[in-house]
Every structure is written in C-alpha cells, then in structure tokens.
Image 1: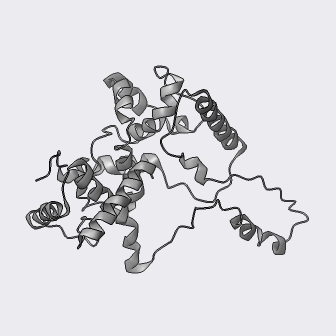
Image 2 (image 1 turned 45 degrees about the vertical axis):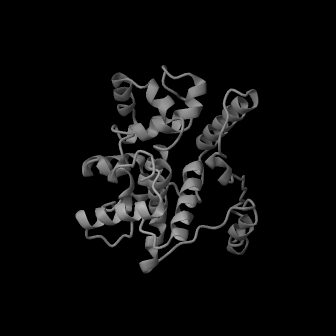
Image 3 (image 1 turned 45 degrees about the horizontal axis):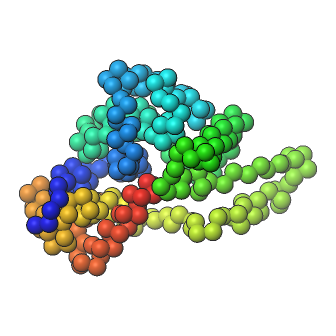
Length: 268
C-alpha cells in the first residue's frame, strides 16, 4: 500500500448527511483543509473559545470588529474561522463525528443560505466596503497574501436608482436581463437540478472524499476502491444519496481527485 496516513471513515464517508445541512457542512469541511487553520488554532485557548461562543449573531457582520486578542493581520487571514467556531463549538472536528444536536445547532446559528440576489442596507454596504478596503490595503503593503482569489470577486455590487413615481413595470422587468450582461467572464450560471438529478449537488462531497483518500492517504485507485467497498459492506446504510466516492474507472477516479484538488484550493 502507498505511504500516507489513511483518513478515517469520518473524513470520507458522508453517508448519513442531512440534505438540509449540505451547504454549511461543505463549507465546514473545506475550512478544515485550509492551510492557515493551524495558525488560527494556535491562537485559541479554552477561555477564548468560550468568549467566541457567547457572542451574539449581530457581532458576525463584517464591520471590522475582531477579538481583542487577535491582531489585524491574523484577523484577515483566519477571521472566517471565528464564525465557524461560533456556529460549532467543536470545530474543527469532522462534521460526521458531531452529534445530531451539534449539527442542527451549527446550521441554525449559521442561518439560511445567503440569497444570490438581495437588497443591501446602507450599513451592509458600508461594512463590506470597509472590509474590502482593509484587505486591499494589507495586500498592497504585503502584510498578507492570498493563495486564491477571495469569494468576493464572484459578487457584483451595483447602485440602482429607481424613481418609483415615474417607472412602470415595462421598464422594471428588463432590469434583471440587463444585469446579466454584467456577469464577470469565466463565471457561469449555477445549474439547478430537479427530481432525481437534484442529488448531483452532492458530488462535491465525493470529490473531497476522493481527494482526501488520494492526496492525504496516498491511496491509488484500486487501494481506495477496496477500502471503500469494505466500508460499504461492513457498515451498510440505507440512504438515497450517493455519497461514497465509488468511481468505476481509474479515469473517473482521477477526474474526481483533480476536481477535489480544485475544490480544496478554492475553498468553496
């Protein structure tokens, strides 16, 4: 067998995942692979963990606040871990080892997924502008560097003025069509699945699992296949979701590992 620490099943067997938890669970698991996680954990003490858990939801808006014990430079490097720790006091334990109550609480604290199209308040705009200017300043000074483009680059923010007294529906309806022309090059619309094809959105968990077995565990395709099959037979589960990384050829396995590599690098 190839050299490497083979991940435990909690790292790659996502059967039993609650579908409504999928979005947050994927964010959680990808954060566990971020290279700066160790830096964040080195700053924590039991007292600081309790401090973060006791904060209220409004404290998590991007308004420049940070714990008194965290300097600005590490805050912009690892600040996104703070919210995950607030959502789940056991972070960064694997999602699949958490109790059902811990998972439910984490998803509840995280709140509903942010809508792709929303109207921002003046305070939200100011908060985001402050954050972006701060990051830009740190990047320019060389204080921090980013290994991959931040998620904010996917977000377009525009000022739209509507004179409600003069505008009629005929003018308002084409507005979204005009906004589509502003989509950045290389970013494609999300493909939404329905019916039995809806399970396709869970393919990222399989790609992450394949990446962990291959890159972290050092397993070749046949070795990984044998391990997965043993797990499937020894721990059978009734589930409608196809979440085991069972790829039927070396080529499809390699493709999944490559996609998992890109997924981990992007972090979303």
